[in-house]
Amino acid sequence: MSARTRPATRKAEETRDRIVDAALQLFRDQGFDETTMRDIAAAAGVATGAAYYYFRSKEELVMAFYARTNEEARELVPPLLARTTDLQKRVRSLIEMKLSQFAEHRRLLIALVRIGIDPAHPLSPFGKETQSMREESIESFRMALDKSNVRIPKDLQSDLPSLLWLYQMGVILYWIFDDSPRQRRTETLLDGTLDLIVRLIRLSSLPLMGPLRRRLLNTLRAVTI
Image 1: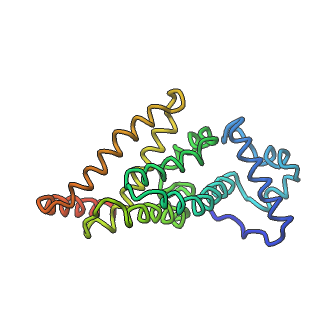
Image 2: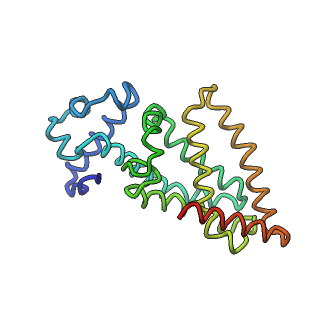
Image 3: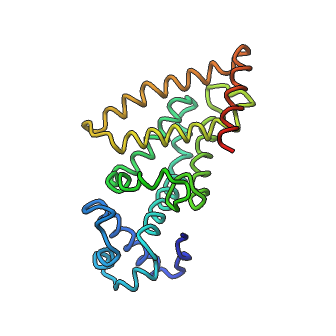
């Protein structure tokens, strides 16, 4: 399922954005499943047929939300990483940026979890339709590793950005269901696990860790083919 070609005229762009904004507001207020395209059209002040002209389904609206956050991240990531060479701080800033982008949309994300784990679903972060956005997110972790204060073994350099992205996805999943005040348990999770991950990366560069590192990488590559 792919979104329609981005409108060329300014008025069409504004209408499209208004429909997306209305949809996201309704998803927050009444839930993804409970919201209809007719509801979205009414909230956006357009005819139902006009809403369908821009987006054939609610799923396409969610894809537009994904694309919007991705475009925002493209602008936010470089200055975030430029602030420090500390790898732990860099990775944390990327994850916190993503959580900040999603903060108003936790209710929507809860509804999407059940389909997100199916890579065949168009909205899955592991699927073909989201591949370009996934690759951009992985690239941001590659940028975080580049010129950081941690030496990355050569045989780990190609796989580590993807592994950090998977770690981020795990944190986001935990955060979605974290009902503690201000999601403090997620903060605790980040504090403990991120420190441990960076320590393990440092240790992985030791000569004695070479055989174990290669064995781990071979296993990961074998199960992800």
